[in-house]
Structures are given as structure tokens and as C-alpha cells.
Amino acid sequence: MTSQVISLSDSLWVQSLHELRHDIYHLPEYLYLEAKRTNTIAEAILIFEEEKIFFLPYLLRSCDNLLDEGITFKEVFDVVSPNGYAGILLNDAAAHTPEFLKLAIEQLISVLQARNVCSAFFRLHPILNHDFHEIISSQFYQVSGETVSVDLMLSETEMWHQTRPEHRTHINRCKRAGFTAKIVPFKEYIDEFLLIYNQTMDRVEAKQSFYFDREYFIELANLNEKIHLGIVELNNQVACAGIFTECCEIVQYHLGGTKNEFLKQTPSKLMFDYVRVWAKERGDKVLHLGGGVGAAKDSLYNFKAGFSKQRHPYLTQRLIIDAEKYHSLVELRAKTLKTQPEALLQSNFFPAYRSLN
Image 1 (cartoon, rainbow, N blue to C red):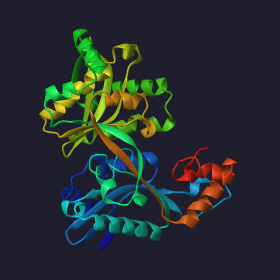
Image 2 (image 1 turned 30 degrees about the horizontal axis):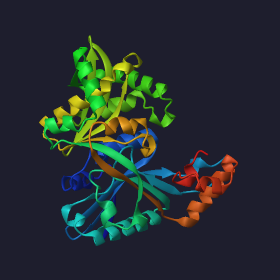
Image 3 (image 1 turned 135 degrees about the vertical axis):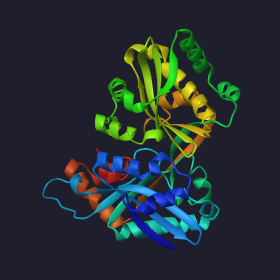
Image 4 (image 1 turned 90 degrees about the horizontal axis):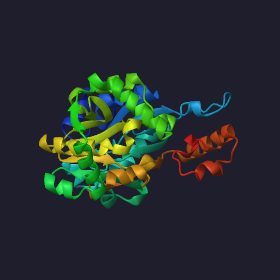
């Protein structure tokens, strides 16, 4: 079994993706954007044995800035998935060899340990990694929630039938009121989208990590044909908007929002109804809507669940690579926060030393 850490500039990154069904979250351009946004280093690990391939992108983060001045813990890192569902990519030969996946994960841990990484948090892909819980030991993953997707292989009639009656009522009501949905070039609507998105985040009192600056959206728009903006208009005014990504026949709902004055009409229901038909006509196979905030079964999850009966377990990997360094960081972080290490360890936040409690 051979392993190799790949940088963004390495042509092997793109070459590997040519061999694997992937999503936007695996593209070097997307990892570059995420690394820039989070002040981290984007890398990927490639592990292969004969014809079997394992590929996983991630962001490498320094742990130095977690502690008070004067407390040093030099050259200790952790890794995390980029925003979204990156997950592990396997080719067909690897996917049909459970033992290879187990050994590859063990190899991943070994490689990270040699690079002074003390922990790793990976979000697995609900579509591409849908059966991981069936083929690997539970010690390598945690069921962190559930996500919703629309099966675009169904007929339009069946998709409509699977839509919650309340949603169908609101969609029809929007149409009768003159709302219209369409896909438009994101680059031409960035400022309009930013206004709507920030208004939505303010309204729901979102954490600061859910806000993105204008430069982020400009660079996201540079992914060109993989980025689409769905909007709903009434009298030439945009009522709601959503960013959708498209890659390898997978469409993902990325970010979106609704203007305050249109909340009562729920135009986003019309937008999702339109996008699923649009995606089906393009030959895509699945529209992944995602889950609730923090993977909770909250009002956002309930809203998405009204569009389909298809569900996926949302799996995460929470790996302590170096237990000694991990627990030392927890103790030092607890001192910085003036709390007890046990409080951080019981917070269910991973890694515990990045907990804000």
C-alpha cells in the first residue's frame, strides 16, 4: 500500500479525480477557496494498492493560535474537511474491497501522525459514502445526523407526489401570485444574493462562521459551469435565491436565503421545485438538499424533508491521531478559557480543544 500527500499545485490531484466520481468539495479550486477563507493549508492524501484508489482532501490547521500568549505548543496541527461534504473517494475496485478501506484509514492515521497532526475531523459525503457504515467498523465513524435528497431518476409526477402537501399548496399559491423561478448566472447577481443571504443570516441569528464576504462569492462564481444561482422573482424583484453546485451528476444546495418581506409566501419552495426539474432535465441523478443546522433535525431539516422521502445517514470521522498531544491541548485550552478539561471533553465538540465553551 502506497500513500502520497498532494498539494494544490500537484497535477496528480486533478489526475486522481479523473478516475473517481467526485463532488465540488473535492476540486482543487474549491479547496483553494476554503483554505484562503479559513487561513489553512489545502492538501489531499492519495492511497493506492494495485488498482484500488483512496482519495481524501482536507485543510491543515495550526493549533498555535488556540492558546494564550506565552503558552506555546509548537508545530502541532489538526485537519478538517472543507465546508460541505468532502468525504472519501474510492474507485470501484476499492469500494468492493472493505479490507482495503480499513487498511487505508489506518494508513491515513499513520501518515497524519508522522506530520504532527493530533486530530482529524472529516465530514463524509452522504451520497458518495452512503454505505460506509455497512462496510467499515463503527470505530472509524459516527452517525452525526441525517440529510435529505431528491431522487432525480424519479418521474416529475413521482417527485411531486413525494412533496409534502403543505409544500405543494405553497408552490401552487406562489405560481398563482405571479412568482417565477429560473436559473441565472451567479456572477451577475452576486450583490443581490449577498444582500438576501446576509439578511437571512441576521434574521436567524446565525453564528459568525455562517457569514461569507463578497470576495468569497466572487471566487466561488469563478467555478463557472459548476455554480448555478436559482432565484424566484415577483415584478422583477428577487424574492429568494439559492446557490446550487453541479458535479458528476450530483447537484448540491450550497447557500441561500429569502428577503424578509417575502417570508410569508415562502418562495424558496417554488425555487427548490423548479431546480429539481431543471436538474433532472440536465441528466443529473440526485439533488442533495443537506440537513439541519449542525446536523440537527430542526426547522431547516423539516423544511427540506418536505421535498422528498429519500434520506441519508450523515457520517463524520472523529479521529484522535496523537492522544498525548490531544489531551495536552485540551488541558492548555481549558486554562485559556478558565474552565476544566472535563467541560471541554463533555461538550460533544470535536476536537474538544477547539470548543468555545
